Length: 630
Image (cartoon, rainbow, N blue to C red; front, side, top):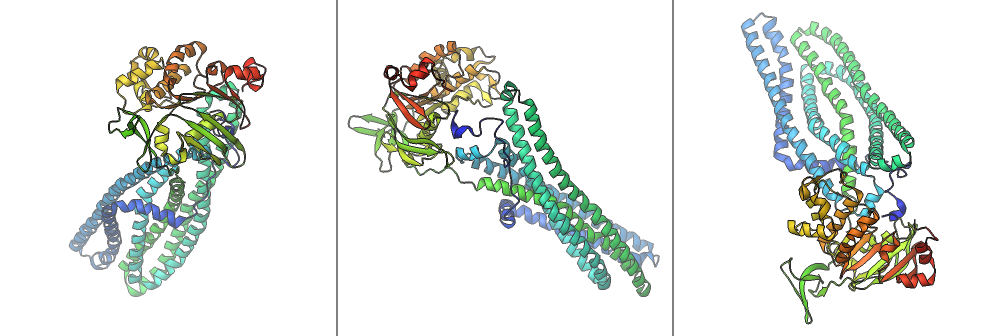
């Protein structure tokens, strides 16, 4: 697909610009949290149980600390050792119960977390399948992959730990505050004057930390995208000796990530020392004031309990401060996930569908058996039109980005059964024409009809089901050879798969593989030659048995000997079908009923092979080697 989008997104090196992979900080904190809560809301009963466990655990923690007051005043000071033993057993039981409750809600939150992120991954992947190709043109693979890895992991960590910790810390803080006010309002005011400094520190450091972690996420997205593209493009890198430049490009992005991560972790690391020192200061001030009050009141147990609460009241604040970065990272990650989910899906207003029908001179009757009959278009009024493969462009104008026109008022037609060849320089618009037939992109102006029907009125799935496409770049999936051919028609039998392979002359090399059709391919079929991979691609198209066939430089990766081997099979595949052929080897299009020569988005010549040679124009120059077909 040489000229698609003017070369964007397909070359592994020049894709990266100064703004590539840029993420924005969360713009809608409340909305993002609300959507996350919508996912968590699916587990209401479990969350209620978690909340009950958290509040009971907080009560155990607060209540256990208060027992210090009667323990000292009523048992230790009077020397009541039997009562002391019972009180210690009670205290131990309370703390043991708290530990059990903590373990219980932690296990439940793990299950909720994993179920939630599994649902997020499922919805995100499903959304990707609905997006148009232009969305993938504008986003690198690594950038999209980071949504499934870094961002999902951040959300998982927040739900698994931070969510419960936030509730627990809040409950513990409120319970501790209530008990402190009960024991001594004066000491509480002294303690919270120092806590005010701690909260100011959390706010100041947390604000800077938020910006730093957002920058870190942006930087790691750029690094991931670069690594992914450089890995995929290793062959190109080595061919053009680009290793040094690739390393330099990675070092720039890696250094940017290092600086962003250093800043983020510096602020995160500063949080605990600051909070710890302020906590010690708070404890010392409370000790001095409390000692004076205890001497006057004689409530030594109350002082001990209050000092315990002084330690305890700063812990929730410290825990919240620890989770701030995790929560902010999760919100930023969730927002990027939801940005993909909110992206405009591929629009399809088509109502005409593809059905099986039996067509006679008197008309067509729809067939319920998909294995019999011929293909027909079913209109909204129930009328059936036989699929003939008549494709026409009427003054079509198209641009990928809205600024540079790729096709300029193109008009052409392909009658049923005709073989139409598209030739011309790279960027002339050949592949764009086939992309528009598939409705991968929408027209700026003009109309394309298929058997007299505007393709915008045809349901996209039905339209694409009627088209067989053999691309220049073959993509094989992880699975067996048979599974890869079966992508042409998922319900095909093994016999039909083998018949399609024979038609493409792929059967012979397949049977020489270790397990034949059951041979498992991985790494995009790296164990096969480029020609063998293309043969499987052709077999895939043969299996789909479409009325219209598009060959986008389908034999460009096959040597001349292999090309001759499949020529007979290709002729059988093309027989009776409308065929669009894009080819660099002009010898492969000599038998086309019409050859269209494109330059800069316009058709400058059209006609048969002999007619175009007689004109001694651009096609003559290309065929005789006087001009390059780049």
